[in-house]
View (cartoon, one colour):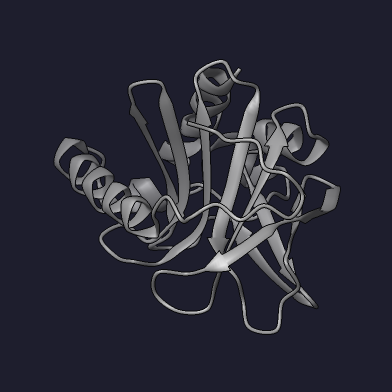
Length: 184
């Protein structure tokens, strides 16, 4: 369930552990269901290869899960606790909760980019179950950065001059559209 937050309200963590479990289960399910040769799964396909879009990174991908009315789209390494960014929404809500662990010395914000759109988004920080701070922010699905992500399939996160690209593997590109179709 997506909750609206007052500007300074801190909500107890719903679970970095839940995100990690979701990544592990989805990764196992995907591995069991995949019939694509590994070399084909990492090769760029179609427009993504020709458009100048960022290329996928081996071992990292978007994972999409639906549990009842809730949908999650997470970027990271399957079978690990390497979660780079999590997106969550309730069916038809028009709202997306963005979350991840804060980077060292980073302000309480997300600096996101996709296809030429870039935005700094204020975040709520809370203690992370593992260490440091955990950031969350809520955006409407119509936010320009999210709309460009829906169109391009990739996002980037910035911390100072460091840019972390999050491009899908070729077979995972439809997961982005499925997530936004679910969110409304």
